[in-house]
Amino acid sequence: MANTAVTIVVDEQNRRWLSRTVRSARAQARAVLRARIVLAAAAGLPNARIAADLQVGVDAVRKWRSRFAAGGLSGLTDAKRSGRPRRRLAGRADPG
Image (cartoon, rainbow, N blue to C red; front, side, top):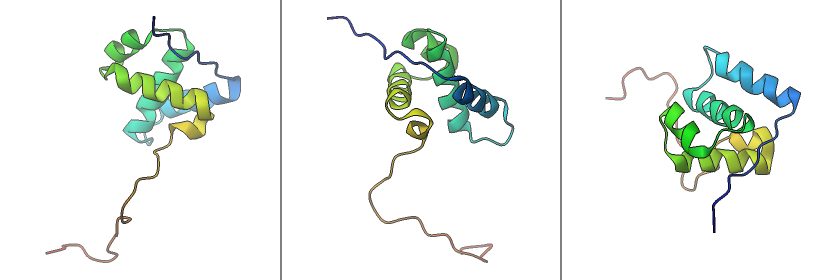
């Protein structure tokens, strides 16, 4: 049985948002990578080619391709993690 990649269809509004994210100097690196993966997948490139071009694992490409297919742009956000939330200490320059 052959593995087939999830087909990605990106509407014009989402394509503009993804393209803007890729060009942004202020976007987080992980958001830029995810946007690049989705745009390459929408262009019809296979997972192995996307992984090689972006220097990531094929599993990462599969993950973000399928998460976008299932949830759209909101599927590209980080999933909730278990455990205690991180605490930030306000006003402390040196924690030591």
